[in-house]
Structures are given as structure tokens and as C-alpha cells.
Length: 178
Image (cartoon, rainbow, N blue to C red; front, side):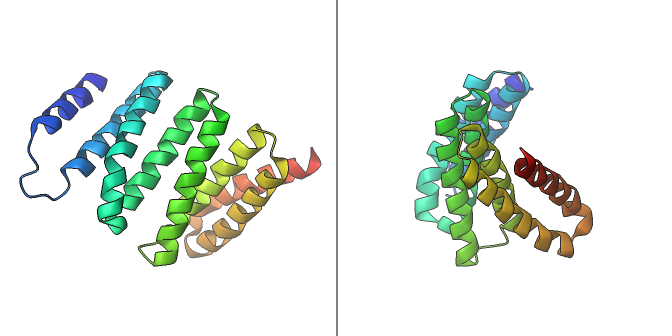
């Protein structure tokens, strides 16, 4: 799969953006797929580099057209954070994830779409990362905020969000007894 994605990226890189409708966004998405392939092969350094390529490609797109570029940038930063955390680059991972969270929050505030699930997932992961670097109070605040958000989402779609809410409540309970 990795070789197939690499070939697709090579081809995409050679193709001109004839109509100006998102060549870089498509290339960035291919880099995110390659990052996931590397991660699946436990090649975390390569996974970080591929995800960072997506960040590099999405950054100017986010400036030019925030409503379409920012979601890709936030998603890419979140993937970078996960790969950095796998490499035990906890401070870098936390910074990348906080940036992703900020972008999703901005998008939600601007009414650019429904990013509540992404914000909840970022808060859930932030809690884990903060706990990992010894920021226990911040970790509890993040998980409490994630629980509040997932309660609302669960009311709207119990089948999709109840398992996440249950897991968060269990983790919150564990944090209070340890």
C-alpha cells in the first residue's frame, strides 16, 4: 500500500493544477494517507514527516480560503500530534494538538460547519497528552469539557457517541480515584 500511495503522490506532483481547484489539497490528503501507512508499519518518523508535508501544503490554502483550508490543516496537525506522541515527543505533540484544537474551535465559532465531534476528540486526546506530561489539572479540565460536549452529541446520536462518552466517563472516574 505504501508504494502505491508513493506512486500516486509522485504522479500528483507532476500534474499541473489546470483549473486551480485543489491540487495541493489532494496532494496533502495523499500525504496524510501515506502517514497512516507509515504509522501502520510502525515507521513513526516517516509518518511524522508525511503528515508535516500535509501541514506545509494546507498552510497557504488555509490563508487563501479558510473555510476549506483550515479543516485540512487542523486534521493534519492532529495527525502530526499523534505521530509525535508515538515517538514520545510529548511537548511537540501537545503543541501540535493544541493548534489543531484552536483551529477547530475557530471554525466552529465562525459557523463554518459542525466541528463538535472533532473538538470533542481533540479534547479527549489533549487530556491524554496533558496527563502524559504531568499537567494533571489541565488534563481533568479537558476531559470534563470533552464529557460535556459528548453528552450533547450523545443526545443527538446515541449510537455514534455513547461508546466514546462511556469511555470518557470511565477515564474521568479513574482520574479522580488515583
